[in-house]
Image 1 (spheres, helix red, strand yellow):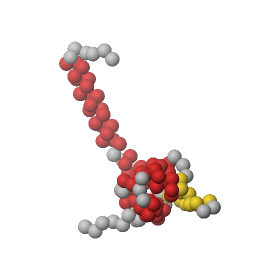
Image 2 (cartoon, rainbow, N blue to C red):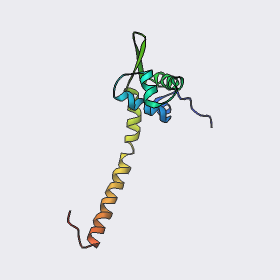
Image 3 (cartoon, rainbow, N blue to C red):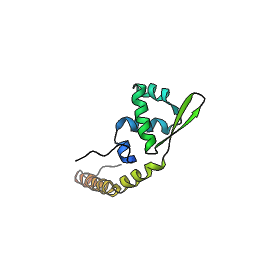
Image 4 (cartoon, rainbow, N blue to C red):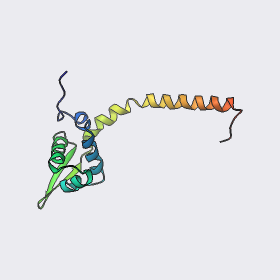
Length: 115
């Protein structure tokens, strides 16, 4: 099976852990490449490569201020990911409900424990 290009959509772009780290850092505010390099401990060309991918899918925007290029997070393309993951929320809710049932059964078997 051919591997999907990383620049096709946000799902592919955030599949790479370093890109998720970059997004997490940018969620706190605008940063320069040198700030990101320092925060990640990676070589500048590698950070720039990840930023290029994030820009191509619209997750990051860049603006120039003097000689600096400042990057910021664009959250809009994350919405499809959020909605997709949210579709599985019912499975977690059901599991938590089942855990509550099991804990209640265990408490009943012990004669009840005060909370």
